[in-house]
Length: 622
Image (cartoon, rainbow, N blue to C red):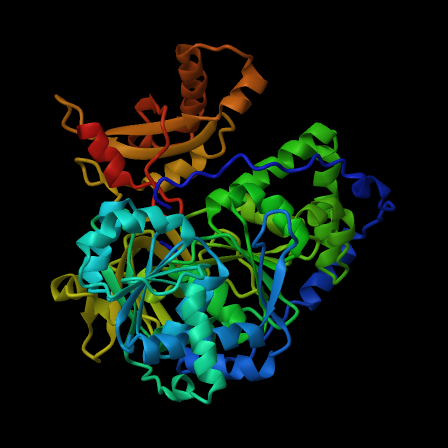
């Protein structure tokens, strides 16, 4: 799913693993010939799960309020020293109705555009749901934006209210005098009474509760037009300035309908919220989807707390981006290596895979220590936003956790493709969801071309930008709207999508050869001495061709462990360059890396941890 500015994965701690459970498993004798025979006999494709047919989020809201009233909806740690607070569906929906009533009736914000900005927190969920159920147009904003860009988004959106977290108070203070059109600035977790244009969220909430208790049911009577513009999201954009994506209630409801046949969730499931809610990946698949199925959502305190939070909340599903999954993979395997059990673990992966193929699953018992440090109940990890090394996905499957991949964009709200949980294919980006169709435009001899998407989740268009909308949405002779994703990929014989690059990132040689940086970056990702990298075509004076270059942030901890301490910059450069030369041997000559740059600072990133290539290249030019 192509969807953090200056985002950095902190060095979170993962406990040492002794892998005693692997040793304690009785030796299993396996008749591989019999296994293969039984495996072939069992090869019958599972049918899809029953599909939901929601038209609006309010329809989902009413159903979940009635059906899951006493179940846990949100878990959040409001005080670092306290345990997680459990908030039920009834408590959550009561707060949504109260907020919606006050905003529409007392503050006259019906159908207005309202900014929501802040970290993942309970008030964010309440605010967003109130917007979708009848208040106005929600404008979720990246909390990492600098003050001038936050002001710009508020102005562009023509927002008349801003709901913000306490951590953004100083930023809002800097810009509020420049925003005369904003009627109210509403601070989350604040009891402040209305003073000028500022009021506390809790004050608004309590006013709404008084109105509801006095018999005001106007908010629940608001009817939602499925096609009405309800959400405005300014994309972080890895290649250009942010565009405003306009979504309707139907777009968001169709995400729930689209996932339901592929992945079954119920009130026993708990999702772990670690990605930013301002993006559709987390707000739709990480919030609206579980809400529709009676699941609970545990809010991570922050990435450095991910391991203790996982252990405390015991989620069954984790939505993540590749960088986070790769970090977990590396940390877990580093501790296994130190335990001296790596060989035994690999052997048990083979044995347990063979047993699982005939219905005998002992993975949870064998790899219990890994499970326990991930909470003990994790059954699904979903990766999206960027390509991931297939060996990491395979490893997740091998230890007994379903590894699914999703694909989509903010413009598709976001789901367009997903791996069915009963038909895994590691390495692919999934297959088209039931409300979507994928096709490859003008494929080359390898079947690769631009990915086109036709979907019920496709945006209404770009905000106040018909020209940009017409550039990416083309209407065919049958009146179908096809979105030109800018991603390059191919479809296999089973309809699974494989993304091979981004058309705007492609490096074209003078003789017409196409080089996709993502392909080379995945190979460089296997070098333990490299923490992060970016491959691009560098303009060099006097050279006709772009020089294939790699910007690299070294993994100093790994280099120190493997090559010794107190190395000079030149020695570190040589170590990494020698490893890159080994990769070059595996590449055709025109794809080989000719230039290495050691990067001292962090990469500029979007809010889903993707490197902003154009920003890095512009830094080079300057």
